[in-house]
Structures are given as C-alpha cells and as structure tokens.
Amino acid sequence: MQAMIEPAATEGVKPPATTVGVIGWIRGNLCNSLFNSLLTLLILFALYLSIPPLIRWTLVNALWSSSGQECKAIDGACWSVVTQNLRFILFGFYPWDEQWRPVASIGILIGLLCYTRQRSHWNRRLAYLWTAGIGVMGVLMHGGVLGLSVVETTQWSGICLTLLLSLFGLTAAYPLGVLLALGRRSKMPAIKSISIVYIEMIRGVPLISLLFMSSVMFPLFLPEGITVNKILRAQVAIILFTAAYIAEVVRGGLQGIARGQYEAAESLGLDYYLTMRLIILPQALKIVIPPSVGILISAFKDTSLVVIIGLYDLMKTTQVTLANPEWMGFSTEAFIFIAILYFAGCFSLTNFSRDLERQLET
Image (cartoon, rainbow, N blue to C red; front, top):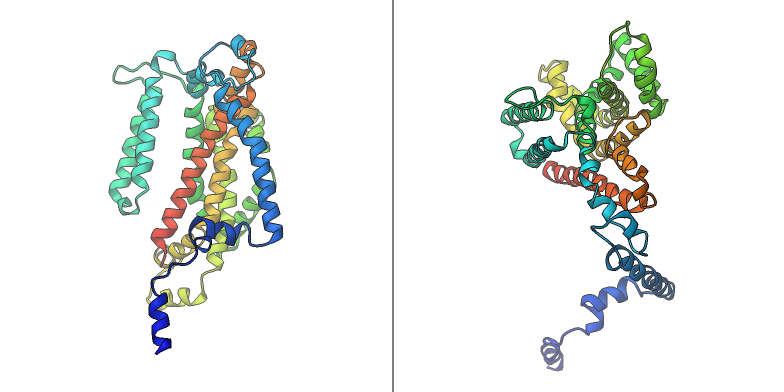
C-alpha cells in the first residue's frame, strides 16, 4: 500500500531549479568540474576587460559622418572613412552619374541567387533566367544600347569587379574541374596524362604567380598590336587555378563510389556518358559538397589577390581611399568594413551548402 502511495505523492513534484533550464545547463556544461569552473571565470573576466572598451571604440566614441581632421581628435572609431567614401569604395572609377547601373546589376544578381537557392527551381527555366539576367547585367554595365552611354571595362572596379571575377570564376571552374577529374580517371592514356600534368602543374604554383604570368608574361607572346583585356586574363587565371583543386576534390568523390554502382549501370546497358550523368556523378558530387564549397569559398576570397596586378577590385579601391592624406591612419575601420562584405559572401555560400546537403539527404 505504501509503495502505491509514494509514486502518487511524488508525481506532481517538480525537479530542482538547479538541474533544469539555464541554471541546469550552466552547471552541466560550464561548471561541472573545478577546472571548467575556473576556465569559465577566466573567460568571463577576459570578456569583462575587452568588451566594454570595444563597445566604446566602435559605437560610443565613434564618428559616422565627419571629416578626417575631426576623426583624428577622438579616441573612437572613424567610420566616416567608409561613409564619406562609400561610393568610391564600392564602385571605384565607374562614372558617378551612372552608378545606378551597377546597383541595378547587383540587385539582379542577388535576386537570381536567391531564386536559385531553392532546389525546386532547378529546371530549364532557371537556365533561361540566368541567361537573360546575365545579358541584362552586361547591357547595364557596358551600355552602348537603349541610350546608355558606353563604360569601358577598364572603369569597372570596386565590388562590381570582385563579383564579376568571383561569380564567373566559380561558375566556370566547377564544370571544368569535374571534366578534369573524369579525365584523370579515364582509361585513355592521352587524356589521363594531359589531365594529370595540368592538375599537378597548376596545384604546384601559387595563384599570384598565375596572375603575374597573365598580366606580365602572356602579353609578350601575343603578336604586335593584339591585346587581351586585363580583367579577362585575370579571370582565366582564377578559373584555371580553382578548377585544378575542384578536380582533386571530385576525384575523391568518384573514388568513394562502390564498384557495384558501375556494374549496375553496365547491367542496364548504359554507356559511359549515361552512367556518369545519371548514376555516378550525382552520388559523387553529393559526397563532396562540403570540401567543394570550401574550395569555392577560398577562391572567392582569393579574388582579392588581383590587387597585386593593379586591378581596382574592392581591396584596391579601399587602398586608394586610405592613400588620401585626409584618411590616413584609419585602415582598421576600412578593412573591417571590407571584411564584413567578404564574410557576408562566404557565409551565404556556407548556408547554401548546408541547405543543399539537407535537401539531398537520404
């Protein structure tokens, strides 16, 4: 009888507040031992020493719209170096009165990327939308039709050049990398040898060397009077470099496919092309989504290296702004702003890869 009464009596009793909720989580994760408790206290003390001064520097004592001379008289951040030069940092030497055109192009690009994010939109219509969107962006940026004045590519700079190099670089490098991976695993000696030599040679040199060769050495081999756009040369160098790394990642995915998949395709009478397109590549590319996105993110950040060869991308326009005597000494604020822009791009790629992995999970 007593045994039957005790559970009923304790059924409505709640567990102690120190074992559930926030307090329970803190006790279980931050203070579950003497060492962890001391480590937690040290981290809290370090945050106490660092966060208040950081808030005072970034927000409380900062100036957002002032001259460089006024900024030199304060102890806070000078965000005016960004706000007062924002249009030049973002658009560089693109004509001042025509800067609505790159703004519209960037808006179209962001819209296309957001639409592409949904895997349910991956159909033939998406290819048409991208083709039309790229065409409209090209017309807006270059002009020459519909009453738009012509803007030469030498004036494309700032974020427009960064997005151009990264978008087309990543888009062209991925399929080229897949072809190189297939070529390296080919049973044809010539194709396999060419793929191996290309991959190993490109992966054996830094991107800066390829950019220098495209900018300095390549024009020396052209006939007199013939020139190739400097931006195009840098774009090709980025594509070739990224494709070599993508090829090795995809090759790892191909090696992870069981031999039974190939045998199943042969039993169905599928040729090499159909086997790869319908059975092998969908599985291999799904496996290597995380490392592939890592390579693409690295390539997106590496586009900033074109500053070495004198292209006015986002980094170069920022450096030109900081070369102005009025804004010298405020590089920290300017590069924090640039870092936020790069972080937004890399974080978007990371989120897209996570969503894609979730949608393809079986």
